[in-house]
Length: 365
Image (cartoon, rainbow, N blue to C red):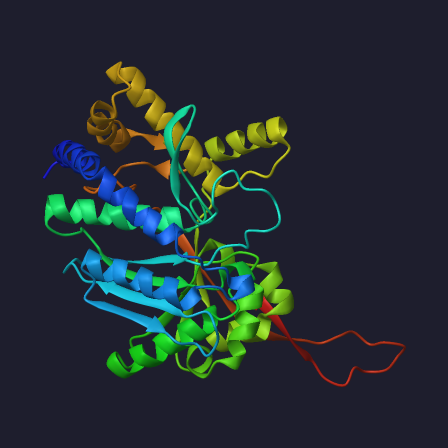
């Protein structure tokens, strides 16, 4: 299948899915209302088991082959589900169902009423605690998945769901959720289980706390992305844990070209901020989109989507080759792999006396 043909088919399928959503909008909204109307205030330990069970039911209704409540020994159960579509790729979806307290402020509508109200410039707005963070987005995504399944017959990917009930408290039991799932996975898939850590500043806390969990700390490898690659925070405060876990992280390789350097100099001069590979990616994506809109003389999403692969096929931007694959994603560029190791550092003589012995220092390479 050509890239243009794939994009055209995707555009037609998307339009059909949108029509399905419009036809079933009332039932989709009622699902969100049902979730918002169930209190789940983690700071007050209010309604959490009931809400977790409601989320599990919604996942079961979506067609997940596995759904379960995860008892982590406190008042904030997790929810696990697996939706197997027989696809080659699997994605993990994270969310949380707990919300903040109502507080003492005056509410114009009942905080757990999930009422639909007229609120210009919008037609109707669903109002309630958790409607925006994070019950509304959670259920809206489940509604979208249901619509795709109804139109296409199945999803293009498998989905794993891990939804917690203590995000407002700082995800205090999330590592226990991971430990429980890892323990079960090791029985089913011995030697084939790993932890994927997608984190930035929180990585130090996660790595240090992981030391208290047997399986995720001792029995599986850990992998990360740009947020855990060459992290000075990890080197300084979680070096031993990163070494123990064998943490390998991918980071996009910085282009070595005059164009990249020139754009970086201009960007820093204009904004006062550091230029990065990911900024270059964003620049190229915006440039490709703008050029396609100009060349097609159209802002119709379907027209632009069909023409975009043709432009990108020959476009080499400041971040490199911008060709798209048959799925409409950019063909991956070169990456570098970072890991953490110890090395011996021997201090110089101090006051004429030889230092006792070298010390282990963590470094990244």
